[in-house]
Image (cartoon, rainbow, N blue to C red; front, side, top):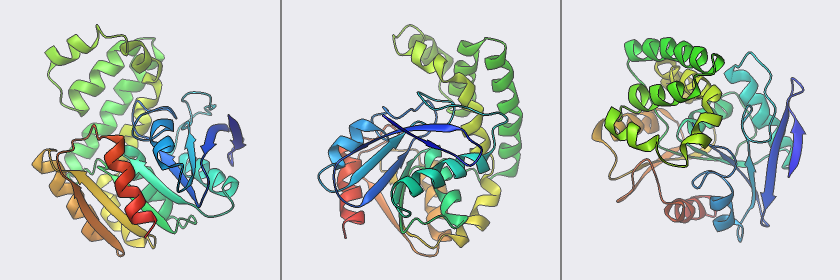
Length: 262
C-alpha cells in the first residue's frame, strides 16, 4: 500500500499493479479499493496492459477523512493520484465514482481518456432536492451510531430495493462491511444530487470518453445515461449486453482494454 497527500493534507491510500500506461479506478457507494468492479479484482484483470491504481476514496479503507466533505476535496484527491501517476492518467469511474470522474475531467484535470459505467444521472430537480434532504438523514444516522439504519435508508430510498430484500441482506456477513462505510453514503448521494447541473458541466469535458450501461439495467436508467453521453462533446456510448449495475469485472475489463488500448 502507498499513500499520497491531497491538497488539504488528507492521506489517500492506494495500490498499484501491472505495467503500462497509468489507469486510475474510482469506486462508488459502499466501495473501497477492494471492490470487485472498481478495485483490485478489476485491476488484476487489466494488469497486463496498464499500471492500475486502485484507491480508497476519503473516509474509506486506509484513507483519512477531513470534514466537512465536499466534491471539490474528492476532485483534489484524484488530482493527487494523477500527479503520483506521472501527471496524466486515464480514469475509469463506476457508478457514482463515474460522476466524480466526470466532474474532475470537466474541471480540467489531465485525463486524456475517461470511461464511466452507469453513473447515476439524476435529471429531475425535485428528486435532486430530495436526495440532498436524504443525505442529511444519512449523516444524522451515521453520526448517531445508527449505521445499520443509514445503510437500510440508502438501499430502500436511493436504490429503491424492497424492504423485504434489505431485511434478508441484513442477515448476511457482508452487512457489517456495509455498516463500516455508512458515514460515506452521504458523500455519494450529494455527488449524485448535482445531476441537473451535470449536463451543463460535462460540456467542458475534453477527454475521449466512453459512457457505458448494462443492457439488462432498467430502461429509465439507460435512457438517462444515454442523455448524459450525448451531452459530452467527445463521447462514445456502449451497452454491455446482459449486464446490470452489478457488472461483471471481466466484461468491464474487456471494454476498458478495447477503448483505452485503441
